[in-house]
Length: 211
Image (cartoon, rainbow, N blue to C red; front, top):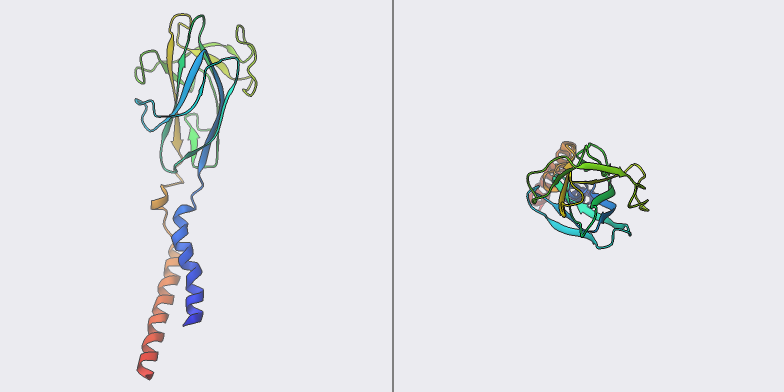
């Protein structure tokens, strides 16, 4: 019986931990906004969400890394930019590690551009397509380190007078990864555990009869 217990124990441990074996994606990014910004991670495209980064000087690149994403859960990356005078613009370079999530473009790497992003000037609703104001290195901002040269400066269609812009992009959970609580133990292991349980029961009955 002791030998049987030693054999079953590792399999029971596997059964208990298999649900937590789903790889977790993490979100990282480098960005700046002329003039200030707050970056959020949200579950709802109409709500700002939880702040994960901020910056108050467009001349410096803001970095954040290691923001964990729950497998099976969709998110939105939100950036609120505030212009304090002159032209306003956002530029950024974002990436996902792991396989449980992708950006709205279907990839794990995303730059600011007019194709994948949406912007609003009134809040987290009434989104429109942002306007392009040059690649990283364009006047009057120059080159921002830590951000790809292919990233675009974007804002609303009036970067001189629209003082606040609300940017949004989707982060989608991939189909092959369900929430941890829904990850099943392989059927073959359950069959094996059931068989061992039956053997244990028979052995116990045999010992009871021999007493």
